[in-house]
Image (cartoon, rainbow, N blue to C red; front, side, top):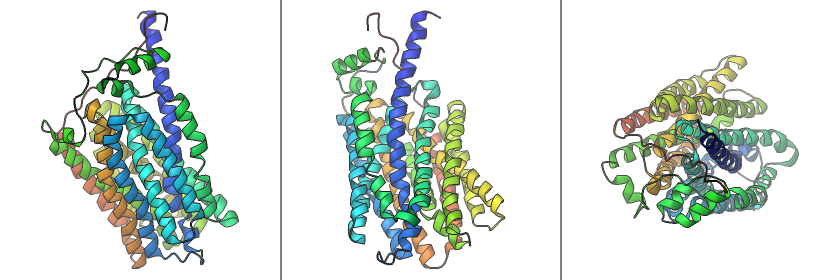
Length: 438
């Protein structure tokens, strides 16, 4: 192998690493903001001044996920037009400011509005970050890097639960939302300064001069891509026989996100209803997200070898078993083990749905495809917290784990159908070294 190709691989690997690192940070903050509601919910329910009931808590939890639905659906087409970097900045700023609204909210109405606005930013950010990583990742490591990115979401869940344990008793639930303002002052400046725009996106939009300048700045070559795309957007998801896998991916995402958001919102409260104290209930949230981190890395490696659709189907099946077992009271050590294993499969199953989507749509429509899959899945994310609230309010918390396990089975069926009706595309080659002097 020549020294040029080695150096090119090294430099392109460093650029991919830079993109993953910055996206990892913003997704970490995304995860904290998303999961903080479930982490502080027991404290909010115990706050007499707030007057929050369990039934209302489920509806309140759905405000953010409804905002995420609109954010994910809207951000994809917009990102495919104006660029990945601008939308990452806008989304991060939006959910940071909204967290401040929640912290200062004088009423449940204002708090709900803040969570809805936060959802717009949260829903827009994740599909863009996934798209960015997919477009910079080497083809043979794409699913692993997508899984690595999504460990940030689970780390955010762990940090949110840790903040809940640390802040609830001493500083109250509002303090956790004040911390949610920090990304505006930490992540946004870093994205502005260091995150490059996607080279594949720029070429697909005909902005070759801009792509060439960025490639020169980072010492890499332009990826060999097709000619500039004439159009993308939602119609591109239904052309050329893609309508079937598009609909199946949407339905799989619906089941997966109903499961993820239902469990993450209500796990501490459901475990308290099973007889565990508050400390243990919040610890389960930490443990399930630790399992999620392990699961992302394992799933990514398996998906690079066997395919993301196949791994997603197997993972959802194992998730159904794990979540169902959570409803069976066992010794504490066994419960922790089950919670951890459920986390290993729960979060990475949904991530592999996104990974499968990135490999089945071209550059012009990729962000729209990922965003629409996440966005249509948000209907499940809205339903999950609401459904958990209805079960809790009706004294049927024992059915919660069974219902969420059923959502996993639903996802198995449709991700499998999506795999049968679609074919994986080769990712654009990762940029390599520009000629001498750059």
